[in-house]
Length: 636
Image 1 (cartoon, rainbow, N blue to C red):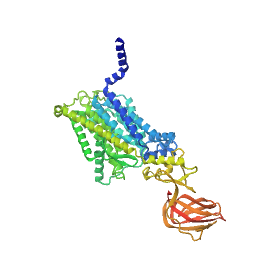
Image 2: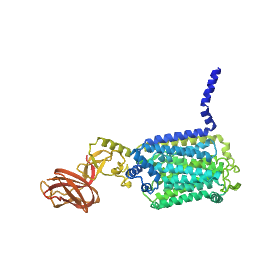
Image 3: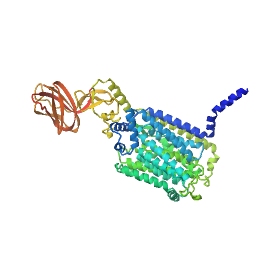
Image 4: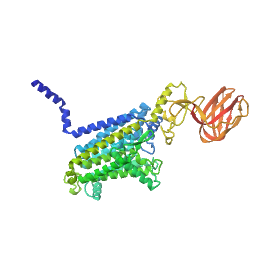
């Protein structure tokens, strides 16, 4: 029996450290489980998709360019993102045209971000089981799904979100300790975000707003004044970083500011952004998505669900404000940051071709989720244990200026209604949390279904299989890829020669050949046929147009061609090998001619209603009655 007891004790000792660790802080243990589940789930979701739209362009640019300062400082769609270009360049040079490395990078980024946010949350707010609510909002909000699945979005937004978390944490530590080394961390956090995305400049006002709203007490005007006075080293550092970045960015960028066409456009945008995207997204929405091609879907919540989300959100604001003094300040912080994001988005998207859907794109507000989750945590739990916000000199700021979470600022008693109906309120809370959780799961699964449909992946896979089976020496005329893979707005990176250039053993593109091939819209290889007006029949019976050595013959087209990019096909019979010169308008192209019956295709930019053909070599005769100027299409 003694032996059995000792064995049981030994077993308990073996499992003791884990059990003790969980019992010491069960909230921490559950939080870590949530982090692992969220990161794994999103990695699985991302792996169902593939590269999309801007990804192809970024990879094409990386494939054609050497790693130089000029390349890294190039703006992409007016975005300053040298670190993003560097990472894409390195991956492209190492693995070529592949999606899995980006899934791994985004998964790693989400893991680092999740851990950093959890640590910040535990530092900022009081401990308690309710801390898991803002953590779950941050980890699982459908508003951040794009950042974990679409590389062109994730390479911007994940570093920006991490910069927000690190900068807020650095400022919090500076406020609570007064140590100057945290100013270095603050500056480095902002610089880190700016290297990936110029929108990270919003971290600067976020740090100021959070300090004034949550870390300095007193009425609004006094809070702002004291924030500036006490923590001026933070603002000096951030101002220097901001001015330095602005000087670099503004000298390289073009203005993206636009004016909305009407008041109705502005109101529609605000209703989309707040009514369909932000508030529903924080509560598990949008529950229904609208497909947007190969890119990520946009929000399209059901009307009833949208109104229910707003009702729950407003109830949360009212109840938390009644329960905690700091809740009102937290909601003011969220509103102020959301106003900044809305103003920036409205100034750069309204009045453009995207204005009709600008408010339904989750990636435009994925940074708001960071702020919203922090504010929800403060509203539910209050600020972490009484720490005095110290001025730079270290003197006590006085009771009237202590940070809102200080010990001498007590929360009001819970409203009588909540006290009397505690069980009912608890039941409603459980129902709301369960509904939000199920809604989040539904929205995430439906997003995954939309993300898994990729025309670009099918196009690339088909082309790879076709190339593997193509005979040696197969060459191609360059054409745009389907608009659903890379849109025409991305020209010239919508060309097949750009699209495939990162592929190992990719297709060979030429500007002229006897028997070129072409990729159809599905990625299949087919011979080229030129579709367009041909020359009118020539006068020579059995020959058509006879071009003798040294002569130029004019051949009228059946219809004129505008000045554009065309492909010309000439079928001819030649008495010897030579060269010929073709002219359309002011454009001239020389091409090889072989003895016998042959054809030749070549690209030409020009226009007119007549073509000319010259054979410079004397003693050679060329007959042709087949000259077509038009667009290359797959031969059926």
